[in-house]
Length: 466
Image 1 (cartoon, one colour):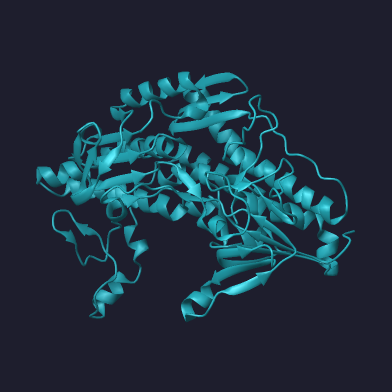
Image 2: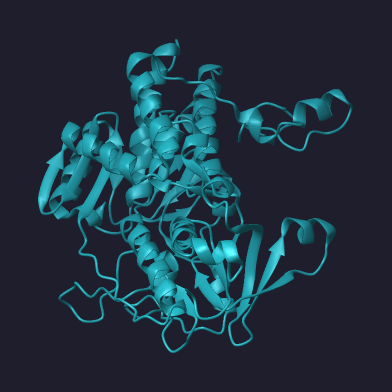
Protein backbone atom coordinates (compact mmCIF):
# COMPACT_ATOMS: atom_id res chain seq x y z
CA UNK A 1 0.00 0.00 0.00
CA UNK A 2 1.12 3.56 -0.69
CA UNK A 3 1.96 5.61 2.37
CA UNK A 4 -0.16 8.62 1.36
CA UNK A 5 -2.52 9.76 -1.41
CA UNK A 6 -0.66 10.26 -4.67
CA UNK A 7 -1.68 12.33 -7.70
CA UNK A 8 0.52 11.25 -10.61
CA UNK A 9 0.69 13.51 -13.67
CA UNK A 10 2.09 12.04 -16.88
CA UNK A 11 2.95 14.66 -19.52
CA UNK A 12 2.96 12.97 -22.92
CA UNK A 13 1.10 10.04 -24.44
CA UNK A 14 3.86 8.51 -26.56
CA UNK A 15 5.98 5.44 -25.83
CA UNK A 16 7.08 6.51 -22.36
CA UNK A 17 3.85 8.22 -21.36
CA UNK A 18 1.54 5.39 -22.39
CA UNK A 19 3.71 2.53 -21.12
CA UNK A 20 4.36 4.30 -17.80
CA UNK A 21 0.66 4.92 -17.23
CA UNK A 22 -0.15 1.35 -18.29
CA UNK A 23 2.36 -0.10 -15.84
CA UNK A 24 1.20 2.19 -13.02
CA UNK A 25 -2.41 1.31 -13.76
CA UNK A 26 -1.57 -2.33 -13.13
CA UNK A 27 0.76 -1.94 -10.14
CA UNK A 28 -1.54 0.57 -8.37
CA UNK A 29 -4.78 -1.15 -9.27
CA UNK A 30 -5.89 -1.46 -5.66
CA UNK A 31 -4.96 2.15 -4.80
CA UNK A 32 -6.77 3.47 -7.90
CA UNK A 33 -9.90 1.56 -6.93
CA UNK A 34 -9.78 2.86 -3.35
CA UNK A 35 -9.08 6.45 -4.45
CA UNK A 36 -5.70 6.75 -2.72
CA UNK A 37 -4.00 7.22 -6.09
CA UNK A 38 -4.97 8.84 -9.37
CA UNK A 39 -3.19 9.01 -12.73
CA UNK A 40 -3.69 11.87 -15.20
CA UNK A 41 -2.22 11.73 -18.70
CA UNK A 42 -1.89 15.00 -20.63
CA UNK A 43 -1.39 14.46 -24.35
CA UNK A 44 -2.14 16.45 -27.53
CA UNK A 45 -3.56 13.34 -29.24
CA UNK A 46 -5.96 10.70 -27.86
CA UNK A 47 -3.70 7.95 -29.16
CA UNK A 48 -0.13 6.70 -29.13
CA UNK A 49 1.56 6.44 -32.55
CA UNK A 50 3.81 3.46 -33.19
CA UNK A 51 6.29 5.41 -35.31
CA UNK A 52 8.34 2.48 -36.72
CA UNK A 53 5.26 1.55 -38.77
CA UNK A 54 4.80 5.02 -40.30
CA UNK A 55 6.80 4.13 -43.46
CA UNK A 56 4.61 1.06 -44.03
CA UNK A 57 1.48 3.14 -43.44
CA UNK A 58 2.75 5.68 -45.98
CA UNK A 59 3.32 2.87 -48.49
CA UNK A 60 -0.17 1.48 -47.91
CA UNK A 61 0.97 -1.80 -46.32
CA UNK A 62 -0.81 -0.99 -43.04
CA UNK A 63 -4.00 0.94 -42.43
CA UNK A 64 -3.27 4.20 -40.57
CA UNK A 65 -5.74 3.39 -37.78
CA UNK A 66 -3.72 0.28 -36.97
CA UNK A 67 -0.46 2.12 -36.25
CA UNK A 68 -2.10 4.10 -33.44
CA UNK A 69 -3.26 2.87 -30.04
CA UNK A 70 -6.31 4.61 -28.47
CA UNK A 71 -5.29 5.72 -24.99
CA UNK A 72 -8.78 5.64 -23.50
CA UNK A 73 -9.07 1.96 -24.38
CA UNK A 74 -5.75 0.82 -22.91
CA UNK A 75 -5.84 3.24 -19.94
CA UNK A 76 -9.41 2.93 -18.63
CA UNK A 77 -8.37 3.69 -15.04
CA UNK A 78 -6.51 6.89 -15.97
CA UNK A 79 -7.85 10.36 -16.62
CA UNK A 80 -6.97 11.40 -20.18
CA UNK A 81 -6.69 15.15 -20.80
CA UNK A 82 -6.36 16.13 -24.48
CA UNK A 83 -4.21 19.24 -24.47
CA UNK A 84 -0.71 20.65 -24.59
CA UNK A 85 1.40 21.19 -21.51
CA UNK A 86 2.98 24.62 -21.96
CA UNK A 87 4.83 25.06 -18.65
CA UNK A 88 5.67 23.24 -15.43
CA UNK A 89 6.35 24.84 -12.04
CA UNK A 90 7.70 21.89 -10.13
CA UNK A 91 8.39 23.95 -7.02
CA UNK A 92 4.65 24.63 -6.80
CA UNK A 93 3.72 21.19 -8.17
CA UNK A 94 1.58 22.64 -10.98
CA UNK A 95 1.49 22.19 -14.75
CA UNK A 96 -0.04 24.67 -17.18
CA UNK A 97 -2.15 22.91 -19.81
CA UNK A 98 -3.92 24.38 -22.84
CA UNK A 99 -6.84 22.05 -23.60
CA UNK A 100 -9.12 21.90 -26.64
CA UNK A 101 -11.83 23.71 -24.67
CA UNK A 102 -9.61 26.56 -23.46
CA UNK A 103 -8.11 27.05 -26.92
CA UNK A 104 -11.48 27.14 -28.68
CA UNK A 105 -13.05 29.57 -26.22
CA UNK A 106 -9.96 31.74 -25.81
CA UNK A 107 -9.87 30.98 -22.09
CA UNK A 108 -6.72 30.93 -19.97
CA UNK A 109 -5.02 27.53 -19.72
CA UNK A 110 -5.78 25.17 -16.86
CA UNK A 111 -3.42 24.52 -13.95
CA UNK A 112 -3.17 20.88 -12.91
CA UNK A 113 -1.68 20.05 -9.52
CA UNK A 114 0.22 16.85 -8.83
CA UNK A 115 2.35 15.00 -6.30
CA UNK A 116 4.48 12.97 -8.75
CA UNK A 117 5.46 14.26 -12.19
CA UNK A 118 6.45 12.14 -15.20
CA UNK A 119 7.81 14.26 -18.04
CA UNK A 120 7.66 12.35 -21.31
CA UNK A 121 6.62 14.88 -23.98
CA UNK A 122 8.90 13.31 -26.59
CA UNK A 123 10.51 15.36 -29.34
CA UNK A 124 9.64 17.52 -32.32
CA UNK A 125 11.24 17.87 -35.74
CA UNK A 126 14.54 19.71 -35.68
CA UNK A 127 14.41 22.21 -38.51
CA UNK A 128 17.02 24.62 -39.83
CA UNK A 129 16.51 28.12 -41.28
CA UNK A 130 16.38 26.83 -44.85
CA UNK A 131 14.61 29.32 -47.16
CA UNK A 132 11.30 27.90 -48.36
CA UNK A 133 11.30 24.92 -45.99
CA UNK A 134 8.35 26.17 -43.92
CA UNK A 135 6.31 26.73 -47.10
CA UNK A 136 7.10 23.56 -49.04
CA UNK A 137 8.63 21.02 -46.62
CA UNK A 138 6.78 17.89 -45.44
CA UNK A 139 7.50 16.31 -42.05
CA UNK A 140 7.36 12.63 -41.15
CA UNK A 141 6.70 12.23 -37.43
CA UNK A 142 2.95 11.71 -37.22
CA UNK A 143 0.47 9.35 -38.85
CA UNK A 144 -1.24 12.36 -40.42
CA UNK A 145 2.01 13.37 -42.10
CA UNK A 146 2.64 9.80 -43.28
CA UNK A 147 -0.77 9.48 -44.94
CA UNK A 148 -0.57 13.02 -46.28
CA UNK A 149 2.78 12.19 -47.87
CA UNK A 150 1.34 9.04 -49.46
CA UNK A 151 -1.56 11.02 -50.94
CA UNK A 152 0.83 13.70 -52.12
CA UNK A 153 3.21 11.28 -53.86
CA UNK A 154 0.41 9.50 -55.73
CA UNK A 155 -1.05 12.89 -56.65
CA UNK A 156 2.28 13.87 -58.21
CA UNK A 157 2.10 10.77 -60.40
CA UNK A 158 -1.40 11.82 -61.45
CA UNK A 159 -0.14 15.32 -62.29
CA UNK A 160 2.77 13.95 -64.34
CA UNK A 161 0.47 11.55 -66.17
CA UNK A 162 -2.00 14.28 -67.16
CA UNK A 163 0.38 16.92 -68.53
CA UNK A 164 2.58 17.33 -71.58
CA UNK A 165 4.60 20.15 -70.03
CA UNK A 166 8.08 18.67 -69.39
CA UNK A 167 8.85 21.15 -66.58
CA UNK A 168 5.71 20.28 -64.63
CA UNK A 169 6.23 16.58 -65.23
CA UNK A 170 9.87 16.63 -64.13
CA UNK A 171 9.11 18.57 -60.94
CA UNK A 172 6.18 16.28 -60.08
CA UNK A 173 8.31 13.14 -60.45
CA UNK A 174 11.27 14.43 -58.40
CA UNK A 175 11.22 13.50 -54.70
CA UNK A 176 13.84 14.90 -52.31
CA UNK A 177 14.32 13.41 -48.82
CA UNK A 178 16.54 15.26 -46.36
CA UNK A 179 18.04 13.14 -43.58
CA UNK A 180 19.66 9.71 -43.68
CA UNK A 181 18.38 8.32 -40.40
CA UNK A 182 15.76 5.61 -39.92
CA UNK A 183 12.79 7.86 -40.77
CA UNK A 184 14.26 9.23 -44.00
CA UNK A 185 15.71 5.99 -45.35
CA UNK A 186 12.71 3.82 -44.48
CA UNK A 187 10.17 6.33 -45.80
CA UNK A 188 12.08 6.79 -49.05
CA UNK A 189 12.58 3.03 -49.48
CA UNK A 190 8.92 2.17 -48.90
CA UNK A 191 7.53 4.99 -51.06
CA UNK A 192 9.93 4.28 -53.93
CA UNK A 193 8.82 0.66 -53.77
CA UNK A 194 5.16 1.74 -53.80
CA UNK A 195 5.54 4.08 -56.79
CA UNK A 196 7.50 1.45 -58.71
CA UNK A 197 4.48 -0.83 -58.28
CA UNK A 198 1.94 1.92 -59.00
CA UNK A 199 3.68 2.94 -62.24
CA UNK A 200 2.39 -0.21 -63.97
CA UNK A 201 -1.10 1.34 -63.89
CA UNK A 202 -0.01 4.60 -65.58
CA UNK A 203 0.27 4.47 -69.36
CA UNK A 204 2.91 7.22 -69.53
CA UNK A 205 4.80 7.06 -66.22
CA UNK A 206 7.63 4.57 -65.81
CA UNK A 207 9.75 3.91 -62.71
CA UNK A 208 12.84 5.26 -64.47
CA UNK A 209 11.02 8.59 -65.06
CA UNK A 210 11.06 9.28 -61.31
CA UNK A 211 13.98 10.85 -59.47
CA UNK A 212 14.50 9.90 -55.83
CA UNK A 213 17.17 11.90 -54.01
CA UNK A 214 18.43 11.31 -50.46
CA UNK A 215 20.41 14.20 -48.95
CA UNK A 216 22.56 13.54 -45.86
CA UNK A 217 24.87 16.08 -44.22
CA UNK A 218 27.25 13.47 -42.75
CA UNK A 219 29.44 10.91 -44.53
CA UNK A 220 27.10 7.92 -43.97
CA UNK A 221 23.49 6.91 -43.44
CA UNK A 222 21.86 4.72 -40.79
CA UNK A 223 24.75 5.07 -38.31
CA UNK A 224 22.85 2.86 -35.82
CA UNK A 225 23.36 -0.28 -37.95
CA UNK A 226 27.11 0.24 -38.30
CA UNK A 227 29.45 1.44 -41.04
CA UNK A 228 29.37 -1.78 -43.10
CA UNK A 229 25.59 -2.00 -43.31
CA UNK A 230 25.44 1.75 -43.89
CA UNK A 231 27.62 1.35 -46.96
CA UNK A 232 25.55 -1.63 -48.08
CA UNK A 233 22.39 0.47 -47.75
CA UNK A 234 23.89 3.20 -49.91
CA UNK A 235 24.83 0.63 -52.56
CA UNK A 236 21.38 -0.97 -52.41
CA UNK A 237 19.61 2.37 -52.81
CA UNK A 238 21.85 3.42 -55.68
CA UNK A 239 21.23 0.08 -57.38
CA UNK A 240 17.55 1.07 -57.35
CA UNK A 241 18.49 4.30 -59.15
CA UNK A 242 18.12 6.40 -55.99
CA UNK A 243 20.53 9.35 -55.91
CA UNK A 244 22.24 9.26 -52.48
CA UNK A 245 24.24 12.41 -51.74
CA UNK A 246 26.45 12.28 -48.64
CA UNK A 247 28.21 15.31 -47.07
CA UNK A 248 25.50 17.43 -48.67
CA UNK A 249 22.98 19.87 -47.22
CA UNK A 250 19.76 21.43 -48.43
CA UNK A 251 20.49 25.14 -48.92
CA UNK A 252 17.08 26.30 -50.18
CA UNK A 253 13.77 25.12 -51.55
CA UNK A 254 12.32 28.48 -52.56
CA UNK A 255 10.00 28.49 -55.58
CA UNK A 256 9.88 24.70 -55.46
CA UNK A 257 13.53 24.31 -56.42
CA UNK A 258 15.73 22.23 -54.09
CA UNK A 259 19.21 23.77 -54.05
CA UNK A 260 21.92 21.57 -52.51
CA UNK A 261 25.28 22.54 -51.04
CA UNK A 262 27.10 20.68 -53.85
CA UNK A 263 25.57 23.07 -56.40
CA UNK A 264 22.86 20.73 -57.70
CA UNK A 265 19.38 22.17 -58.35
CA UNK A 266 16.24 20.05 -58.61
CA UNK A 267 12.84 21.51 -59.49
CA UNK A 268 10.57 19.49 -57.22
CA UNK A 269 7.15 19.57 -55.62
CA UNK A 270 8.20 17.18 -52.83
CA UNK A 271 10.74 17.95 -50.09
CA UNK A 272 10.49 15.58 -47.11
CA UNK A 273 12.36 16.74 -43.99
CA UNK A 274 13.55 13.99 -41.64
CA UNK A 275 16.81 15.57 -40.47
CA UNK A 276 16.65 14.78 -36.80
CA UNK A 277 14.60 15.79 -33.78
CA UNK A 278 14.97 18.05 -30.75
CA UNK A 279 13.42 17.99 -27.24
CA UNK A 280 9.89 19.26 -26.81
CA UNK A 281 9.68 23.05 -26.10
CA UNK A 282 7.85 22.48 -22.80
CA UNK A 283 11.15 21.38 -21.20
CA UNK A 284 12.50 24.92 -21.55
CA UNK A 285 9.43 26.18 -19.69
CA UNK A 286 10.16 24.21 -16.53
CA UNK A 287 12.28 24.87 -13.45
CA UNK A 288 14.08 21.52 -13.87
CA UNK A 289 17.76 21.06 -14.88
CA UNK A 290 18.54 20.62 -18.58
CA UNK A 291 21.69 19.50 -20.37
CA UNK A 292 23.37 21.26 -23.32
CA UNK A 293 20.96 19.62 -25.77
CA UNK A 294 17.87 20.75 -23.86
CA UNK A 295 17.08 17.36 -22.31
CA UNK A 296 16.26 16.74 -18.66
CA UNK A 297 19.30 15.66 -16.63
CA UNK A 298 18.36 12.31 -15.09
CA UNK A 299 19.80 9.75 -12.69
CA UNK A 300 20.07 6.02 -13.48
CA UNK A 301 16.88 5.60 -11.40
CA UNK A 302 15.07 7.86 -13.93
CA UNK A 303 14.52 10.68 -11.45
CA UNK A 304 15.33 14.23 -12.50
CA UNK A 305 18.69 15.06 -10.97
CA UNK A 306 18.67 17.37 -7.95
CA UNK A 307 14.91 17.18 -7.43
CA UNK A 308 12.35 14.92 -5.82
CA UNK A 309 9.02 13.65 -7.15
CA UNK A 310 10.06 14.38 -10.77
CA UNK A 311 10.73 11.59 -13.27
CA UNK A 312 11.63 11.45 -16.96
CA UNK A 313 12.59 9.04 -19.76
CA UNK A 314 12.65 8.76 -23.54
CA UNK A 315 13.61 11.50 -26.00
CA UNK A 316 13.15 14.21 -23.37
CA UNK A 317 15.64 12.71 -20.92
CA UNK A 318 19.41 12.33 -20.74
CA UNK A 319 19.54 8.96 -18.97
CA UNK A 320 23.01 7.63 -18.04
CA UNK A 321 23.88 4.40 -19.84
CA UNK A 322 25.28 2.25 -17.04
CA UNK A 323 26.23 -0.49 -19.53
CA UNK A 324 28.50 1.77 -21.62
CA UNK A 325 32.26 1.61 -21.23
CA UNK A 326 32.85 5.31 -21.86
CA UNK A 327 32.01 7.72 -19.00
CA UNK A 328 29.14 10.16 -19.42
CA UNK A 329 27.35 8.12 -22.10
CA UNK A 330 23.56 8.36 -22.26
CA UNK A 331 21.02 5.95 -23.68
CA UNK A 332 20.00 6.37 -27.32
CA UNK A 333 16.67 8.14 -27.94
CA UNK A 334 14.85 5.22 -29.55
CA UNK A 335 11.83 2.99 -28.94
CA UNK A 336 13.98 0.12 -27.68
CA UNK A 337 15.06 2.13 -24.64
CA UNK A 338 11.83 4.13 -24.27
CA UNK A 339 9.62 1.09 -23.72
CA UNK A 340 12.00 -0.45 -21.17
CA UNK A 341 12.62 2.87 -19.42
CA UNK A 342 8.87 3.38 -19.05
CA UNK A 343 8.47 0.07 -17.22
CA UNK A 344 11.45 0.79 -14.96
CA UNK A 345 10.17 4.32 -14.29
CA UNK A 346 6.69 3.10 -13.34
CA UNK A 347 8.14 0.44 -11.05
CA UNK A 348 10.35 3.04 -9.34
CA UNK A 349 7.40 5.37 -8.79
CA UNK A 350 5.53 2.51 -7.16
CA UNK A 351 8.56 1.68 -4.99
CA UNK A 352 8.90 5.32 -4.02
CA UNK A 353 5.26 5.57 -3.00
CA UNK A 354 5.63 2.42 -0.90
CA UNK A 355 8.90 3.47 0.71
CA UNK A 356 10.99 0.85 -1.07
CA UNK A 357 14.49 1.39 -2.56
CA UNK A 358 14.73 2.42 -6.21
CA UNK A 359 16.47 0.39 -8.91
CA UNK A 360 18.73 1.65 -11.71
CA UNK A 361 17.75 1.32 -15.35
CA UNK A 362 20.11 -0.95 -17.22
CA UNK A 363 19.76 -2.30 -20.74
CA UNK A 364 22.53 -3.18 -23.15
CA UNK A 365 21.68 -1.99 -26.65
CA UNK A 366 20.54 -5.03 -28.67
CA UNK A 367 20.92 -3.54 -32.14
CA UNK A 368 18.82 -2.03 -34.91
CA UNK A 369 16.68 -3.13 -37.84
CA UNK A 370 15.55 -1.09 -40.84
CA UNK A 371 13.27 -1.76 -43.79
CA UNK A 372 14.28 -0.58 -47.27
CA UNK A 373 11.05 -1.61 -48.99
CA UNK A 374 9.23 -4.85 -49.66
CA UNK A 375 11.51 -7.84 -48.91
CA UNK A 376 14.49 -5.51 -48.44
CA UNK A 377 16.19 -4.47 -45.22
CA UNK A 378 19.28 -4.35 -43.01
CA UNK A 379 19.73 -5.49 -39.40
CA UNK A 380 22.53 -5.47 -36.85
CA UNK A 381 21.33 -7.44 -33.83
CA UNK A 382 23.54 -8.84 -31.06
CA UNK A 383 26.60 -8.48 -33.27
CA UNK A 384 25.08 -10.28 -36.25
CA UNK A 385 24.58 -8.50 -39.56
CA UNK A 386 21.70 -9.40 -41.86
CA UNK A 387 20.76 -8.07 -45.29
CA UNK A 388 17.88 -8.39 -47.71
CA UNK A 389 14.93 -10.66 -46.96
CA UNK A 390 16.14 -12.03 -43.57
CA UNK A 391 16.64 -8.48 -42.27
CA UNK A 392 13.25 -7.38 -43.62
CA UNK A 393 11.57 -10.38 -41.99
CA UNK A 394 13.32 -9.63 -38.68
CA UNK A 395 12.20 -5.99 -38.93
CA UNK A 396 8.57 -7.02 -39.30
CA UNK A 397 8.76 -9.72 -36.63
CA UNK A 398 10.40 -7.46 -34.06
CA UNK A 399 8.04 -4.53 -34.52
CA UNK A 400 4.99 -6.79 -34.61
CA UNK A 401 6.05 -8.06 -31.19
CA UNK A 402 6.60 -4.52 -29.89
CA UNK A 403 3.39 -2.80 -31.02
CA UNK A 404 1.06 -2.53 -27.99
CA UNK A 405 -2.07 -4.65 -27.47
CA UNK A 406 -3.01 -8.00 -28.96
CA UNK A 407 -5.74 -6.24 -30.94
CA UNK A 408 -3.20 -4.20 -32.90
CA UNK A 409 -0.88 -7.17 -33.40
CA UNK A 410 -3.69 -9.24 -34.88
CA UNK A 411 -4.89 -6.46 -37.18
CA UNK A 412 -1.40 -5.67 -38.50
CA UNK A 413 -0.67 -9.37 -39.09
CA UNK A 414 -4.00 -9.76 -40.91
CA UNK A 415 -3.21 -6.80 -43.17
CA UNK A 416 0.21 -8.19 -44.03
CA UNK A 417 -1.38 -11.54 -44.84
CA UNK A 418 -3.99 -9.95 -47.09
CA UNK A 419 -1.33 -7.81 -48.76
CA UNK A 420 0.48 -11.00 -49.73
CA UNK A 421 -2.67 -12.42 -51.33
CA UNK A 422 -4.06 -9.35 -53.10
CA UNK A 423 -2.74 -6.38 -55.04
CA UNK A 424 -1.52 -3.23 -53.31
CA UNK A 425 -3.87 -0.25 -53.04
CA UNK A 426 -2.69 2.81 -54.97
CA UNK A 427 -5.55 5.21 -54.24
CA UNK A 428 -4.87 8.82 -53.23
CA UNK A 429 -7.50 10.28 -50.89
CA UNK A 430 -6.09 13.78 -50.66
CA UNK A 431 -9.53 15.32 -50.25
CA UNK A 432 -9.71 13.71 -46.80
CA UNK A 433 -7.44 16.50 -45.60
CA UNK A 434 -10.03 19.11 -46.65
CA UNK A 435 -13.35 17.24 -46.26
CA UNK A 436 -15.55 20.36 -46.35
CA UNK A 437 -13.93 21.96 -49.39
CA UNK A 438 -16.27 20.45 -51.99
CA UNK A 439 -19.39 21.35 -50.00
CA UNK A 440 -18.14 24.90 -49.42
CA UNK A 441 -17.65 25.27 -53.18
CA UNK A 442 -21.13 23.88 -53.90
CA UNK A 443 -22.64 26.23 -51.31
CA UNK A 444 -21.10 29.25 -52.99
CA UNK A 445 -18.24 29.77 -50.58
CA UNK A 446 -14.51 29.69 -51.12
CA UNK A 447 -12.97 26.34 -50.19
CA UNK A 448 -10.41 26.51 -47.41
CA UNK A 449 -8.23 23.76 -48.85
CA UNK A 450 -7.18 22.38 -52.19
CA UNK A 451 -4.15 21.37 -54.15
CA UNK A 452 -1.56 23.60 -55.72
CA UNK A 453 -1.64 24.43 -59.39
CA UNK A 454 1.45 22.84 -60.91
CA UNK A 455 2.60 26.14 -62.38
CA UNK A 456 0.78 29.09 -60.82
CA UNK A 457 0.40 28.04 -57.22
CA UNK A 458 -2.70 27.48 -55.03
CA UNK A 459 -6.04 26.87 -56.71
CA UNK A 460 -9.59 26.36 -55.49
CA UNK A 461 -9.79 22.64 -56.19
CA UNK A 462 -11.62 20.65 -53.49
CA UNK A 463 -9.63 17.56 -54.38
CA UNK A 464 -5.94 17.04 -53.79
CA UNK A 465 -3.54 16.90 -50.87
CA UNK A 466 -0.81 19.41 -51.68
